[in-house]
Image (cartoon, rainbow, N blue to C red; front, side, top):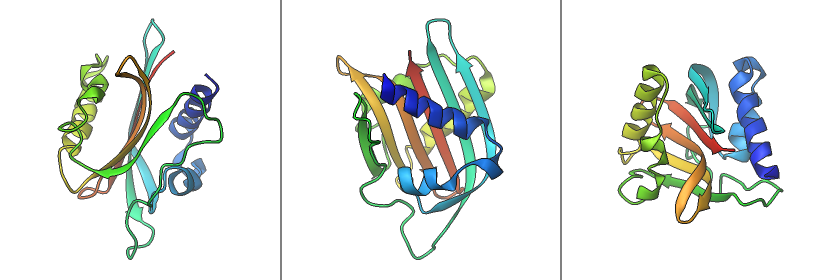
Length: 167
């Protein structure tokens, strides 16, 4: 529960801050990206009656160092609170061919059509082999119930930050 609170605080901080106030060290030191976030181009937050919460942010970015890989090895890092969150470190797409248990993203009922369209773009991004993804998750009975996912669209210089929490 403590870890869930920490991740939710990070998510709220990122999503509610003016981009000038976003701490770039989150992107470089915690999730291990060689990027500078330029602007947030989309944001939506939904909270359902049963405690389910979805948050999506999409950012434009530029590489910090063009001579280095976009993702650092061994990232994202686990926080100091062990909690019951698991982690999948940076991998190349495609995702849904090998990890069908992440259907939580595709089966979620989005309240706004624009949010659904952006989530579908993220899913489409996950089918391109040049893109990258990583995520934190909680699993119950073989199903992912809580998710914080990062998806890099390398051809369009976009970073998707997708979160779904069952509280």
